[in-house]
Image 1 (cartoon, rainbow, N blue to C red):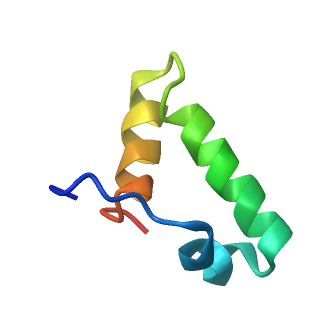
Image 2: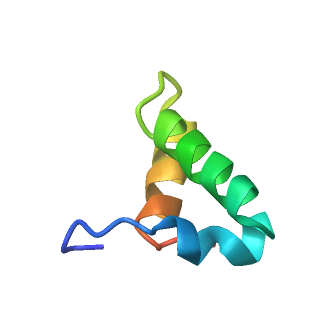
Length: 53
């Protein structure tokens, strides 16, 4: 998103099904968003910004 907003754990609950899974998913996306693979970085950043579902 242009304002730099990142999705939060609560927004991932529909995918994660519970708070532990949502927290793990958020952590994994953050890790991937700074990782070495450019395609995974792009995907993770898109999800974190709310551009991809």
